[in-house]
Amino acid sequence: MPAPSPVVELRDVSKVYQPTTRGGAEVVAIDGVSLTVDAGDVYGIIGYSGAGKSTLVRLINALERSTSGEILVNGQDIARLPERELRPVRLGIGMIFQQFNLLGSRTVAANVGYPLEVARLPRDRRRARVAEMLDFVGLSDKARAYPDQLSGGQKQRVGIARALATQPGILLADEATSALDPETTHEVLDLLGRVNKEFGVTIIVITHEMDVIQTLATKVAVMDQGRVIERGDVFDVFSNPQQPASARFVSTVVKGLPSAGELAVLRDRHPGRIVTLAFRDSSVDQARVFGEFAAAGITFEVVYGGINEIQGRSFGHLTLALTPGPNAGSAGEADAVVDAALDRVRTLTTVTEVR
Amino acid sequence: MDSLLALMPEFWKAAGETLYIVGFTLFFGGLGGLLVGLGLYLSRAGSILANRPVFLVLNLFVNIVRPIPFIIFLAAAQPLARMVVGTGIGNNAIIFTISLAASFAMGRIVEQNLLTVTPGVIEAARSVGAGPLRIIFTVLLPEALGPLILGYTFIFVALVDMSAVAGYVGGGGLGNFALQYGYRQFNPVVTWAAVLLIIVLVQLVQFLGNWLARKALRR
Image 1 (tube, each protein chain N blue to C red):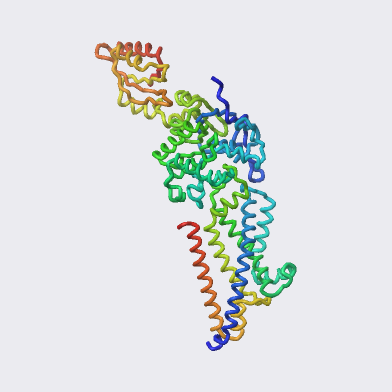
Image 2 (image 1 turned 45 degrees about the vertical axis):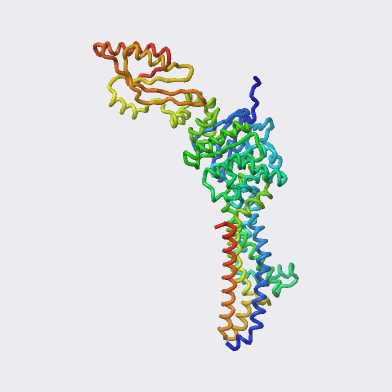
């Protein structure tokens, strides 16, 4: 299998804003970021507001110009390209926005046709392409409507149709679902998934919602203060985050270890021993783990945690309250039985005893 | 009342002259205002053609010209009118001077209307490869059309106001008529007749402007 070719490659890219007032400090928005996005990826970039992710995505289509470093789009360095020569580059990169940014003075069809006008496509081919795109996003009946007559989700679908009108190979999504309600968010994410699979479009998604990454992305980079602090396959980052900031994002969608407060509540209700077990698809056999407890006559209750699924692979943490069986005698004997069982479980997975 | 009836030919001639002056100044001043407004908008920091020196000079000019009371500006700009139009008096001279003053006043209004266009929409146009000229004609002006129409309606009233002093440089119009035949001859009925016609004229234009703006905004 040939190595996947990068469609976007950032090499040590920085963006520094000059101070706006005399004597003010310069602001380093992007601090030496290197990033490789391969063809067909859905690359998620997550970070809190101010982490620099919106600036980063705008460097890729040169809406913002970098201060230093190389930005390769399909192998061409666009970092120092003059504005006039950016036009063909931008025709190959679609972009959708949090606030949709549709032209209010134009109908839905004219919005979708706008990039084709810029690309100087003849009128009849433009019309055919617009019809095709509106059909793809399921808004053929809204062709003559104006944006202010549409719901948020419909507006974003028009945005997607517009972004893809010129058949770009790359789609940049800047917080594309952040202004939408949860249900509409999933409609739009499903549509983006189809864009990736049916058209083979490489998608770069900027978001602060881990949910978006979980549903859509194949790879993820976590940004903090202008730097990429962690990156990798979504499954790896979710199941085993290395950085505290990444772990915080993961914890917004995945219940891992109980927090101190939650633990106090659990302690109150379960006087026995409490352990947390890590499960990671293919490396841990759940049935065998639970079998060990059963064999030792230990009953248990799942009191916290959950199992998640990403790209067909499951992972998660389960916190169990253990109760030694009736045939264990004194408290000391019961503890020994539990310890022995836990020792056997430790050979299968990571066990954290919560005290 | 009789004297007003006797003055009817002069009255309608004056009304025609007001329309003549206001019509031409709306065209030239409107065009000038559009250019000044676009210049201010495009050159300001962060805009698509950001250029600090251009912005500072334009901004300074607008701020210098705008506060000058028009009747003083009229006198002060007379040599310039003589240079450009060939004469410093008459309706054509005042058309020049009003257009000049209106360009700066309207420029500020155009700038403010353009600023209501969401920057994101311009960013979206840039992201598909649109250049500055295309953005001006396909995004900026169409997106701001509704407010721009209201802005031009607003400046129309100011033009009628400025045209009223045309008499000072040998021009005509309803203002001159009201002063010459009404005020100076102690005949308030004549003055009121001119006032009434101006009110009707302004109402009509305001109505038209609102209607057009509503159409542009589809509300």
